[in-house]
Length: 167
Image (tube, rainbow, N blue to C red; front, side, top):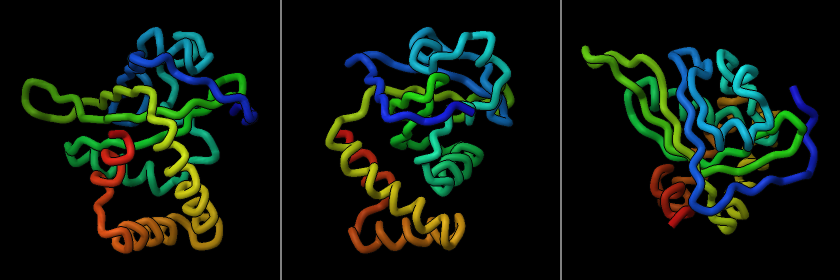
């Protein structure tokens, strides 16, 4: 795994990162923007677990929510901080959905990511930092409880919060 730095890469406005994975999260496709932003070659990415890009600033409970949703065939939107091969990072606003075969069985996952609003990142980053802090002391269950309580206090659902930040 790369050693994180404070060097942030910004996606070009209007650019999209597209990737596909199999059921276990191994990368089966990545567009050129995905490859360029990650800093890895296509050969290094194909077959690698998608969490090769997982930045240590990302709370595990966000990925658990993501996996729970997509494995149920539900789409999810999220803000994700990704780690590049050289240690730099980039934020994305992502939409992840299941891919289906002709029989309606889930055969993998499809993710489309774009540049998030700067204000959204400035709002979500401290929430993620708090989730990580809680995760260190109380595990993923604790951070999940914290997120649920946070949303209840705000009187908003997860999807509403994420979508509202990007609008």
